[in-house]
Length: 238
Image 1 (cartoon, helix red, strand yellow):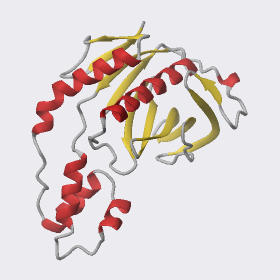
Image 2: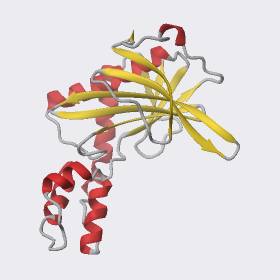
Image 3: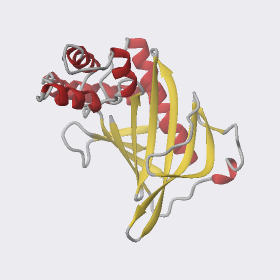
Image 4: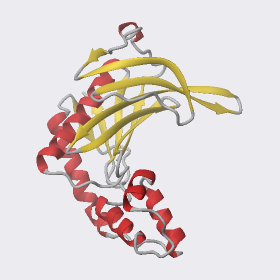
């Protein structure tokens, strides 16, 4: 699931409250640790359970290096480790969440764990929005998950039947993430693993679920369909 956050021009982060705070400063529901290091490309600081890490990601462009704000939260929900990420890109922000084990797969959670997931996502947004008061809008794309947990597990089981496969199930699970599993299947069988088309039909219901949960856990924001595409929608700060 991905989102896009829009900001007002010339954002100013309240860094005084987080300078040299190794344990983090409380913003909303979470402690935010301000990591002063710069991280290139996909490198990132070590995450801490239940704390938001804020750092700068440096990306090289032809006209020079650009620095972008990153926020990451590690939280265990329903026996899985979730990583919530909010990343800046040229004045706007994108936020997503995934599990360490299944990446961006649609993971079947019990209703109570699902509520914890949405409450955590909402609290993550509120904490970062308190850290940076200039965040005003969020574009939500809740129906973009390309595969499910069951599909990934079924793909792994078929990989294990290939005579050309030399990996154990434990090695596949630990070494391959997300679409890498399906890429491995393609290399072994020279064909694409057949995935269910039901997700397309569930997109509308998934969008309605996300809207309902955001209304419940983000009362300080309103939902709008302005400038939305398909089942996407916009969260606006009230």
